[in-house]
Image (tube, rainbow, N blue to C red; front, side, top):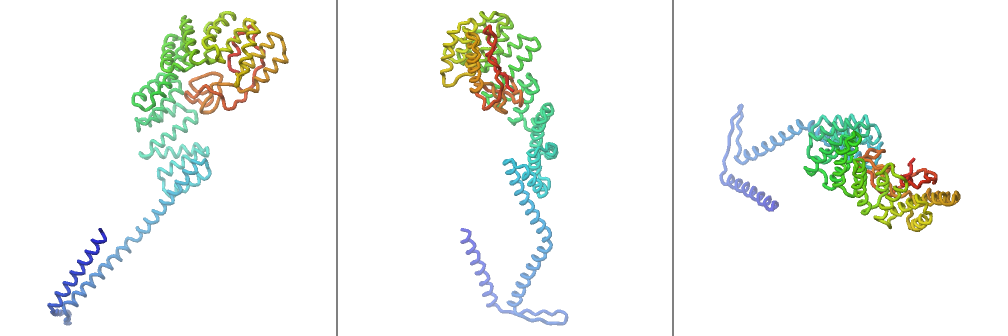
Length: 458
């Protein structure tokens, strides 16, 4: 369509010019000019042609003058465009180097980008990332602080400084920076999660719960994830209250945690233990028994055995037998039955149950350890006991509390990983690879439940 219009316009112009030429040809005339003693006579057509040529020359001279006047700025703008393009390429290459973990190339590209982009926010970000990758946290901090001077990059700078503060272990400084970031973007889920995590790391459980409830109200955190996180926070509050001697408050927090996450073993253990301490032993036992019916767990067995601190070995064995009867075919229940048989010196029953355990495709390490104890207690056969102990040392260690962030295997559950301080990162599973020293097989001769505790990790 545009091509047709251009052809039509050109045809119109030619037609008008031809018409004017014909009009002047039909009306010839002469023009005379007297100027400075000279007389110039010519036709009208020549004068018009001269005017047209003069006008074209004026237009050409004007354009040439404008080009000469603008050429320094033009050249400068071209150079600036080339510099910007060079900076963009350096930024892209630098970000790729950061993603690849190439600290040397990232720093080299960051220097190029900074010189080409003249302090652009993206070049500062790349410089901070490159310095952080190479371990130069001081340089990274300087770059992030420079980003605070620009409103567009202030939030990014604060986030970088928060990460650096956490790496230094300065949770209080990180929390202060996170609150400043929250003032910039109140609805950012990352900020709410960061503030909550830092409050939990500092042991400010009440403040952490308030932050979590607010985040859930504004849908900044997934509801399911929030329930689990709140259960862990409530356990933290229960431990804090119990340490202060406020057992009833501690029980309230523990029971609330159990209601939020009924399958959360540490919550069951905490609530049942506090019930027993407050004289409500049977309620505590029923809570653990109900949890055992759903999923037997060694922490439940250990807590059940510890509900009555001063009972005799026979009484304890009887109680543990009642717990095992809730899930008689489960390996954990069979291990409890073995402990009960050993406590009663019922060697035949202990051996029969252990034969079932060691015949399974996956044998619990504690089954081999119990077999070693049986050989010592029944026959005093150190050679056979050592054979079972050797099997225990070489078989998989079984499910444990494992940090999904750093892989640490602590002896017991805690709200934070003892190694990396990650919040609620301990999960019950088979460790990937753990080196440990297994204690010698001899155990207490009274058949108590000492073997239920996890071996020391070194």
